[in-house]
Image (tube, rainbow, N blue to C red; front, top):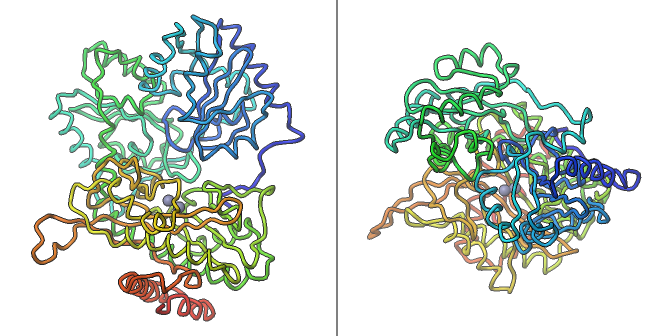
Length: 607
Ligand code: ZN
Ligand code: ZN
C-alpha cells in the first residue's frame, strides 16, 4: 500500500511530547535564546516533506501538511489554518501546546505577547524563506525582539539517532516522449530569459522546478515523484546540480552529462559565496528560497524574482497533454472497475473506509502503470465526508452504511501524467436533501466545465460560476474550486488556481481541477472533481475576442441516483448525457469483466 492508516499517537505515548519539549528547552536555554521556531517545511519548501524533515510532528504530534510551532522557555504554541483545527486538537497535548488559528491569529502577536523585551528567537535558516524571515523581523521589532539563525537545528539534537535518515532514492530520467521538450532546450530558454533580464545566474530550490527543468524524477518524498536537490543556472555555461551522488545512476549521469555538472549538496554554499565574491547578479525567489541561501549570496548579489520555471512548467507541452489524456483514460478504467465494485459491495454495510481505499489502490495497480498515488486517498463516509481534508485511520474508520453518502477523493501518479478525481456515491437510497445539494454542486461543476472566457481571464473570475447554484440555495463551500496539477509531478501546482486567490491568468496548456463541494457538518460531504485542460476556444460567429475553454480530461460516471433531473436545464442535462456517452465509449474497450461492462452501461445511460 502507498498509504498508511495508523492512528496518531495518543494514550500510551502521552507525555512523550512534553518530554521532548523539555529537552528542547534545555537546548534553547543553553544558547541564550528565548524561543525556537519549528515549521513544517524542509529546505525546499515543498508541500510534502520526507520523514527526516517532519520535525513539527516529532515535537508536537501534529501531522498536518502546514503549520508552525513556537516554543518558548515556558509557553509553546502551535499555529494551524482552518483545515487543521479539529485534527490538531486531536493530535496535540494541550497541556504543552496552545493551538491558534491563522491567519486570524498571528505568530508575531504571540511572540510579542509571550517573550520578554529584547528577547531572541532562534530559527533554522534552511527551513524558512527569505520573505518569511523579513516579515517576521519587522513584525516583532516593536518589542525589540530579534531573530537569530541557529547553525544546528535544535529539534535534530533532541531527535538524535531516532531521526530517520535523509532519503537518497535513485533519480530516474523522464523520457522525452513524455516531457516533450528536452532539458537542453528548457535550459537554453531559461538562459535567454536570464540574459534578457541582465541576470548572471538563478538559484533554484523547488524540487518540482528542478525535476521539470532537467527532465528527471525521484522518490525522496511520498506521493510526489521529485528528487531533493538545488540548482544554479548561469546565464552562460553549464548548469550546476547539487545532489547526493548516491542518487545518480549511470543512466542518469549519462542524461545529465551534456547539460549539467553535478556536485554534492555541501558544495552549494561554496558556489554561492563564490558568486557573491565575484559580484554576480543572482536571481532568487524570496518566497521560496531558504534564508540560508539569501544570506550566503548577500544583499548586493540578489535580484529578486519569481522562480522562472513555475510558469513554463504550468503550460504543458503537446507531449505532456497527450500523456495526460492517456493517463486519464487508464485511470478512468480503474475508477470504473472500482465504482462497480463499490456498488456491488457497499450496500451490504460491511465495507469500511479503509477497505474502500485498499480496493481503489488495487484497481489502480491492475493498470500495471501505477508509480504511486498522488496523495493520501480521502475516503469519507457519512459525517466523515464533511471533513474536507479527512485522513482515514484505524481509529476513525467507519462502515459505509445504506442511506449515507460516501465521498472518495484520490489520484494516481503515472509516468505520463498525474490524476486527481473525486466522486460522491449514494450507498442505498439517498434523501431528497442529498439529491438537491448534489445537483447544485453538479450544476457548478458543469458551469466551470462549459465556461468560455476571454484570454487573460484569471481563476478568481471563474470561481463564482461554480458556486452560483449553491448560492441560490443559501449554501457555499469553504475551499477553492480548482488547483493546478503537475505532469507526473505535484498534484498541487502553481501558479494558477480557480479560487478567491486565483490572480493568475489561465493559459492554454494549463491543467486545473474543477471541484466544487458542499459539506453538512456531522452529516455528509459532497464533492465532484474532474481535471480540465485550458485550450483555445472557437470564437462564435460575430465574436470579437480570443476565447479560451476547458477540455475535461477525467473519465468516470457521476452517480445518476443523486441527480435531480428536474433541477437541471436542458443544456446541463445534454452535457451530462454527452459526457456519459463519452465515458462509455472511451472506457468500455478497456473493461473485460461482463458484470463491470453491464454496470458501466447502466451508470452512463442517458438521464
Ligand atoms: Zn482531489
Ligand atoms: Zn484536487
